[in-house]
Figure 1 (cartoon, rainbow, N blue to C red):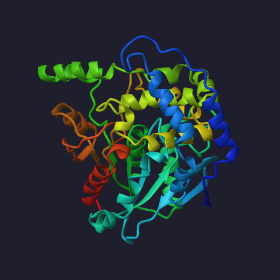
Figure 2: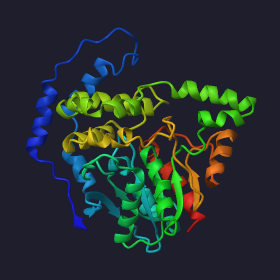
Figure 3: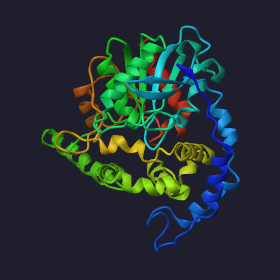
Figure 4: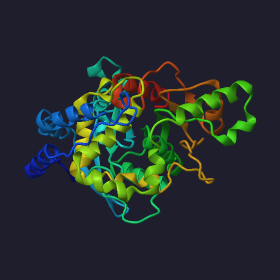
Length: 378
């Protein structure tokens, strides 16, 4: 377990600014707002701020306030933040980020979890927090061969917690993390006390339609309309991730456009992403992808078909009944019924607000919900 600090060379910062200044901008296509993708004026303004207003060094220093380490597991270097609580009886908790995200996803969440007393919450609900970078993301090594799976990462996470001296812990995540959190419980049920995800348990698929009543079929059709919108990054990155990674690895504006397009879809309650997530927070995440060159290697969950069922259809996170589960954002009666079929659901709030990356949008509310779920399992 080797200590680690983020220290991006000045030459890399200069190179980023030079590339941003030399962008060959396209003409704006006809259409309103975001109907053809990220608008030209919006992206030029954001890229200009990235080059001349955004202070990477300040955010690098902020990241380095968290104790960081690198350790080799299963032949791969794993980078992690490990923040122990000042409360000695805190429960260990491993948080797993999503795509296209990184450990940056949790930087505003760590404080409320590790030191609830400082945020006006009950110190008895504190956590020792572990935030690893998923292989292929950020400062963790990328898979060097095909066939990489969520189950393999889950075994790595269980080994990581063992090395840190944690025998009993919780798991939490959203997006890709929502697949990994229950998988850790499957591979190490004797160590995991509970699984909390942002959302995803109980989402129906076509296989569930024959058992639905009339009202549930109407709901299913509405869900189909909602899920059919936007760019299908799962299909795109299953098909040709190498092709697209040339642009994302060579042009910071190409990378920024791609990431802002996806964050626009993920922050669906507001007109632009930075109305839900601070502009600097979004750019710190994009900068981490740029400086580590991981826009391509982070796509392995898609090209390895992590999110596909055996029939090739999209699959939501798999459930498990070995340990209790809960979600930040519960859903309808249909979703609750399906979630309980495959999980031991003990926490299903329906009034929580926020978009896809709720840890970035509403970290205090997210922390409160995580504390409420695990409070009954300590």
